[in-house]
Length: 392
Image (cartoon, rainbow, N blue to C red):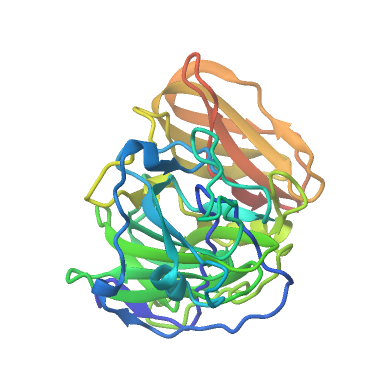
């Protein structure tokens, strides 16, 4: 464990985006929450492993609707509090004391922007997850998730800092060879969407897979969020020195996402974080635990990787990416402030190496960039967003 973790100063708060199968409630107000950064070593016997249930009890993530391979994603189980139970403010208390729902949850990734609590979460067959009284599970529930962290194609080996945007509490813990957990990100407690930053950096080589657990709970309504992020440490940052970012510990349900939109839209502050190297983890960053494969995944999905910004001028941005199958090429850019959309024509030539240039942009303007590809006759697949400000 010492090889992988170095101390820093920041406190990581994990933003957990959402439970696949339930309707979820968010926080009542944008009140404050206490930050915590204590390392916790838990007895693995106290942590219930996610159950493996029959196919008819499988819940696939209906919110992200992302593309997942059989060996990637997260597995989890769901619990909820009954009316006569205490209203806990720690994720572990939810997991240990909640009533289990006999279903296995599968997530392709954890990217749930702040959204209203009452939109609902459904199973693949359209059934709304309910409690023992046949009521939708909107609030006071917890989720225990497991997976393994790894570098995605194109990500360089090195030191990484993790963070979580969540409403309410989330705790990410690394698991060592003896199955002992050490807290990496502690964003526990009732609070609006808050950014928790890891107190330590982790080192990843190509091929490394770090087992972890993620415990999340949603307490009182009216918003939910859960986004797991990381960034490579800046080249001049000593991993043994304090690691921090200006957004660490900041909170507010409208700070990072505009939840009045459906779907929620990122705010300029969120995109400014992306320009500093932060990015939400992709499906490729989650290697599935050994006990099973992901039944919700698509066989041989089209996957976009190595999406990077190549060059930037005052009026144009050039990007490149790879696909695992021959596919079309298109680039979309959005002015983060005005919402104006710029996009290239679709290059219908099927290929695996892609380059696209967006022109006609404004100088000194923040843009969100996304790659779009599709196999012949298939639906378009979108990359993660990158953000960059054009020069003055």
